[in-house]
Length: 136
Image (cartoon, rainbow, N blue to C red):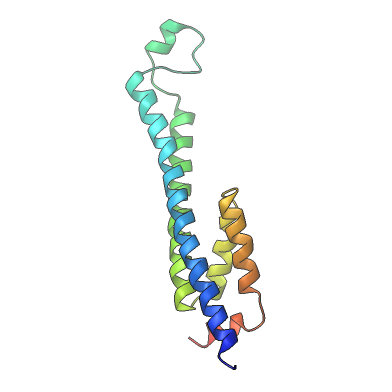
């Protein structure tokens, strides 16, 4: 009976890790979308903010749109990498603080990341979880 809570914790952490990988894949996919839209704007060569058709066909996308798309893509890729690394740390039971921080960051990806982040915070704050992480 003494091993039962550790086994339950192990099962919870493995399930959390699996879903961390899934949310990381979704975040990476959503990071590709701004780059795809920016590429389409460059290929077509139409400025959606131009006041006339003549100006729209002769210009590239605005610099703010270009920078915004790149920054959003990099942010999504960084979050995806962090969430995937946190999933690996959950299985290994290391770096409790990093896992908790990435659970909070995961809450930004509504709705799946929010559900995952809250579930991860619930599991990570249970009695005995921090000790299991400290023992490794």
